[in-house]
Amino acid sequence: MLGYGLRWGSSANAMVVVEAARVFSDGVMFQVGRQLRRGDLSVRAFQQLVHEDHFYASDEDRRARLRYGAVLADGQHVTDGYPFGRDSEGTGAVLMRHGGGGGGGASSYRYTDELWLHPLPPTGPLELVVQWPSLGLPEQRVALPAADMLQAAEQVTALWPD
Image (tube, rainbow, N blue to C red):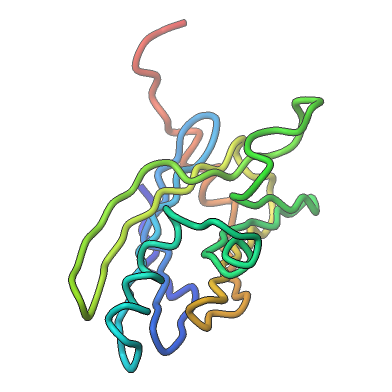
């Protein structure tokens, strides 16, 4: 486990932090923390924003929702949005949300998201990208050295032999 605790992005109502990365032989699972506060939003408006990831209906809502992405050292850009998974040829990297959880009340919420990046990133800088327009969070990036992840992958122990 690589611990980071890096502030990734923030606005008046949201804070996103890259907390850690678990490295596997074939990819990396990033743990991302999200802290939301109501501030001057009405309770109704805040609750709608809190639940938008689960219940969005229109194209407008989709454009305003939380989005994650990554820029790899080889120039690939991947996002957690549609289309899900690999392209039709089965090539390229994949970034997808994988579990998480959280809770809160009328004035604040705390979430933990997991982002699965497959395969392992190439040598060089890895930029993680976050954007959450509905909470005033413009596109923001944080750079992580892929070398640390690749070195950790060399230490991975298989649970079962092939």
